[in-house]
Structures are given as C-alpha cells and as structure tokens.
Image 1 (cartoon, rainbow, N blue to C red):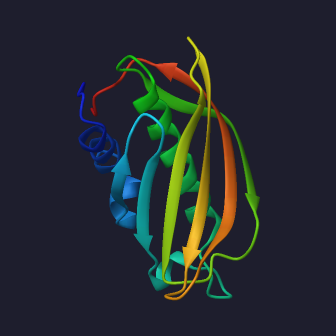
Image 2: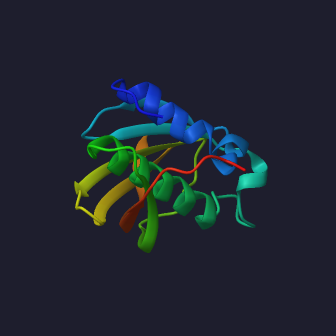
Length: 144
C-alpha cells in the first residue's frame, strides 16, 4: 500500500499485524518524524505483579519503530527487525501505554529507529522503556 497520508498508512500497518490487532493498539498521530500509538492495558497483558509484561512493551515498541521507519522511507518496503535493544526503565504500571516510534537513520538496506514507551496511571505519565532497533528493508508482502 502506498499512500501520502501518514496517519492512514500507519493505521494500515498496525491493522494488518494480527498481534497489534489482538492488543487493540490505536495509532493517534503519524508523520515522517514520529508515530504515536496508545494501548489500554487489560489484565491478560500483565505479568504476576500486575504490570505490563515486557513482551507486550517490547512488541509495541518494535512495531512503532518499524512503522516510523516506513513512514520516513521513500518506498514501499517493509522493515523487519534484525537487532533490538530494550531498556526497561521502570515497571509499566498504569492504565494506558503511549508509544512513540521515531526513525533514526533510513539507509538503502539497513535502517535504524527508536521508540519510547510511557505509562499513564490516570494522573501522571512516566517513561517506562526505551527501545532501539536495526532494521532491514524488504519488499512488501501480501498475506497468503
């Protein structure tokens, strides 16, 4: 899908990913500079202590960062992670998560992006994770 409307493309990229659909992620802003998405946490998304599972946090950050790379690129390629680094700054304890993905450098074959994940408890938003990823570009595939 090629489009000049960043928000429509970002929403398309999240909607076509079954994991993101299952989570109920909502893309709220998108441009060539950043993709912002939100998630309302459900009990099944938490670990034993009641905070968001690190797998959920990392999955959200990975997808937002790859989406940001796609919006910053000039083609219709898909970006696939080849190396990721997640730093869990504090427990993701709250009601919602806000994820901000940003392109760092878009290359011909290898690109770099980042994401930050914030938790909100109804009163205060706090950074809970940072994420950096190396991505490889590939032609877009259609689902089988």
